[in-house]
Amino acid sequence: MAKSLPSSNSVEPEPVFPRFKPLALSDREIFRTILWDFQAETSELSFTNLFIWQSYYGYQWSLDRDRLLVVSAAGRGQTWALPPVGPPPRVDLCRQVLVWLREECGVADPAIERADSRLAAELAGHPGFVVEPIRDHFDYVYRTDDLINLAGGKYHAQRNHINSLARSHPFRYEPLGEEHLSACLYLCARWCQVKRCECDLSLLGEWEAVTAALANYQALELQGGVILINDQVRAFSCGELLNEATAVIHLEKADPELRGLYAVINQQFCRQAWAEVNFVNREQDLGQAGLRTAKISYHPHHLVEKFRIRLA
Image: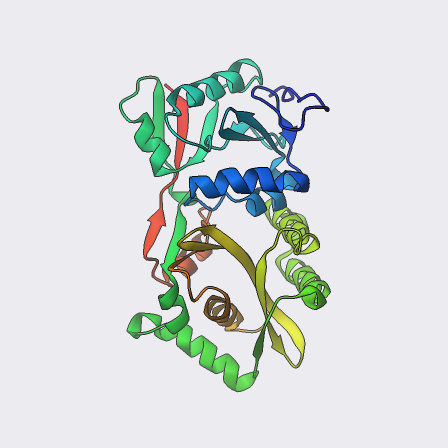
């Protein structure tokens, strides 16, 4: 069993490796500055993503000079690290983190998870590392224009879903505001009831992430949208800029009893919020067959590869 992570001194506002502190909302500006300078392409590397999944993954963070280190220490299996964020070279730091996980945290086979191709390229040719792509973690990235216009035969099914819903249940779109938050939570509770979240730890984790995002919606400065039918919120989505060219969609939920709602909120949110951004990152499928089929059906422009890094 992994040992507890060494904690930072409570009087130190910014922990220095190998000391760590749990991620908190008050850390947002430190993260945002480092992450925006890095111009991340992987969906994990946004403060919002890390913060809303904090309860599930037990994220803690530290600094090594101008580089950000984040580890997951939730006790669900082995403790692991996200890739160091910051300027190259990062080879020595990756080795230090992996050795620290093994020797100080008791992790038998330490790993850096969800590393991007930039870090994989940095480590190429360096002895002592095993770098392997993990397909289940690859992000799906789409041209925003494709998601808005749904043009051509390849999007025939999506257009049919939207048109069918529009005929049977006329809808309207509104930006997600404070007045919608309680209705979004209610919708998620109904969704969880249908999906039996209480029987699935990953779905419970998702429920906690949704709750954290909505409870801190304004503080996180998220953008969102809702679909209303008969003045009731039946679908919502929220996200933010991941880098200068890409928005990332953190959450998307729709009434599971209404066919076509996911297609509608996907299209409308992109049209209303992200039309000026080139790409939309809709995160990974985690190896779930149905989710992979759905994401592929929207014909991604490219996949963002992610890698697992271990000591050889």
